[in-house]
Length: 206
Image (cartoon, rainbow, N blue to C red; front, side, top):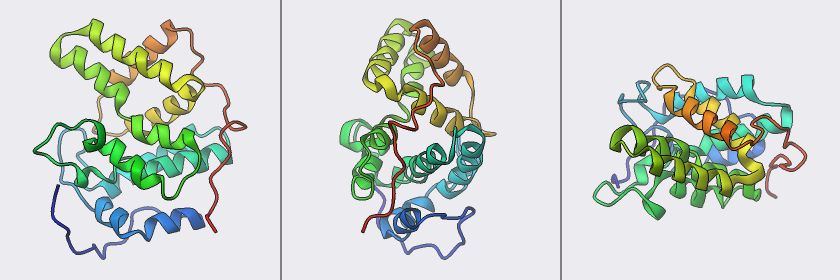
C-alpha cells in the first residue's frame, strides 16, 4: 500500500453528473485513487482518471437506457480507483484485491447489491482467462469462469455490458472478453437481456 499523498489539483477528464457521483468524487480516498497510476501493460493511459474517462465514453455506447447508464457510470467511477490501496507484499486476493477494496468503499455510497457485486467481480472473467493463457490450464480457467457465471446469475448481462465498456480501450487485449463471451454462449445464458427493472438506479443519499 502506498503512503498517503497530497490530493491532485488536476481537473478530472470527465464530468460528475449526479449528486451521488459528486458525493463519491468529494471523498478524499476516491480522489487519491483516481490520480494513482503510471503507464503500464493494459493501461497505457496511466492514471486511473484517464481510464475512467475512456470507460465512461464506452458506457454511453453500451447502456440500454438512462437507468442502466446511471448504474454503469457508478460502477465505472469506483471499480479501479482503489488499486493504490493494494498491499503489494501480499497476495492480491480476498480483501487485498482492488475489486474487493473498491466494493468496501462503495458500500458507503451504494445500496444496490448488483452494483456492489459487479464492482467486486469486474476482473474475475479476466482472471479466469489468465489461468488458461499464462498457466496453460484451460480446464481450470473454464471452471473458474463457470463459477463466476453461476454466482452472477441474472446479473450476467449487466456484468457483460460493463466488461465491454471496461475492456474496449486502446491498450487492452480483446481476447479475454471474446473467450468469456464464447463460454457464456456455451452455457446458454442470454448476454443482453434488459435488467433495468431489476436494477433500479442509485440515487443520492439523504
